[in-house]
Length: 392
Image 1 (cartoon, rainbow, N blue to C red):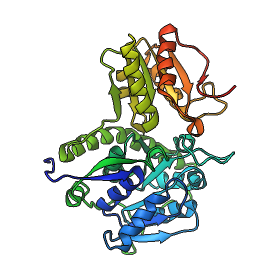
Image 2 (image 1 turned 120 degrees about the vertical axis):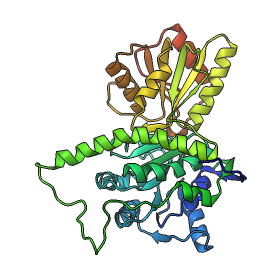
Image 3 (image 1 turned 180 degrees about the vertical axis):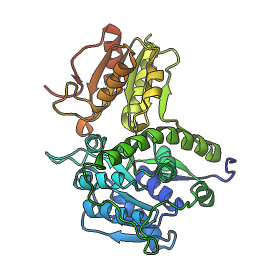
């Protein structure tokens, strides 16, 4: 596949980047319910449908639970579908997340992340998506508006090959409502990249099937194990899709991104736009001050890219895992730290690692804060969880 020659650059928020990607993917059904900070995604998609730029059925529903339920039904009937939500909306739809993955439906959902109530916060952290980490969905976490656009398109190809639903997450407000230059693909080229391929099973009156029925202990376990295998295969598919996309459109990201890791002694492992941007600036500052610092960004969060993460950190003396969510009551408080520490333990990779929590409820993460993580690692990493930026 050749890289397209035509280029069009627009100034877009990450939310609008999602809408343009969904339009390029030529979806059939969109279910919408507004919640901050995702509302402008579906506002823009409504505009595309109203103007005749997108031939899709736009369903206005009464809740996020209903929005996901509507696209479950449409996807089961064979449609290419989209929805979006954030925070409490994702929590309200939590029941249906399991149904979508258990039915192996290729749904794509955007989640500009937002802190979860109570108390009410409309600001950013990753508590909402981290509550959905074990529901059987593929989860991407993007770090720029361009990557959001590209990842939504990749998500459809992955979803329809793996027969799994996909979340594309990114920073609410910090990305969803800030404007960046985004290179848009030719829509006809996107549709060549996303061919319509018949699925083996859809709801069809000419060939009746039952989906999601009651099952007994004789079979339930096997259904769940099939999801395990599907997510394992999705790891490889995600890599393949990213490589194919790079060949077609000239942009690729991999499943893990490494910054200045070739000779790094100390690394911050993190995700999302704000943390990654400041971590890179902190790594540059640390190197100016004599510390060989680097950053590892997790782009594909589920399935967890164990081999790529271990390869990225194998040469460091110590690492810190920076979480923007709290896993309350665990032996460590950060969900990403748990994944990294488990991967290291199970592979026999013995590296000092510290869990740092920061940015909760969009608490500002300063570059100097992240620079202090590198100095802490050089002095000898602590064993307790570090709650950076909190007033005690």
